[in-house]
Length: 127
Image (tube, rainbow, N blue to C red):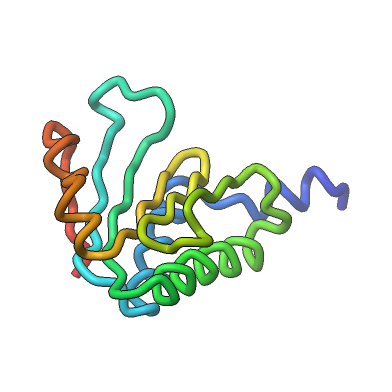
């Protein structure tokens, strides 16, 4: 089997990747996990935002690390993903291409209110 065929076999769909992100966030005890479906808004940079609250910088970092580790297990090398804000941990942005994950501490989430800013998007709470 060629390397290209192997990579194609392990690539997750956006729906599978979204479920994985939500599950890892929940396993790392992130709270108030919310996905915003941006597909109907004509936003070209991604299909979904996932917003979650972490109580500390270490919890936020662990959540992002968990997502990256799980994706690497399933999809292989993660060279195209981008992380911002990891060192401080107040607001970590993880750009997965089709999904952008925002892990924020409570005061940052209250201040920026991304779910209100993107209020026209369909919202789905992870239960």
